Image (tube, rainbow, N blue to C red; front, side, top):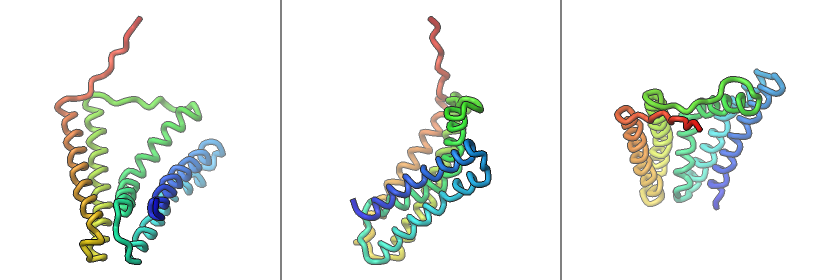
Length: 183
């Protein structure tokens, strides 16, 4: 595994360590502002990844899928960051602190709306990460060195389109509520 791949792994670990530190600080030590500070550090991790990836490409590296994954990671982190933190916050509060309400699995049109919201976040992630991929392709200006980036951009566009199509299908065929069996 190359340096960029290890940087992505470190950034992902760092992302969850910062979130967990923020939640522990917020709920166990009752330091709301310090907890918010830790949670607000997540974009710094993204910035580090951008700098490392762009520097590697600037220094003449031939793009690989790993460079493309860095752009995907960036787009997903920015587009889904707030909702991932909220998801972790709700579960931490319920399962660890034994407070709040149990997170419920959505069904019917509530599930369809939630799924579509996630798909639209995916489209936003694609726009952000895709812009970063397109920027690297443009600035390197060597099709041989950026072929992997272009291929990943095409694949990601297809995946995002499938995601939206699946989410839209839930409006026509909503997820049914599971019936509890009584014994």
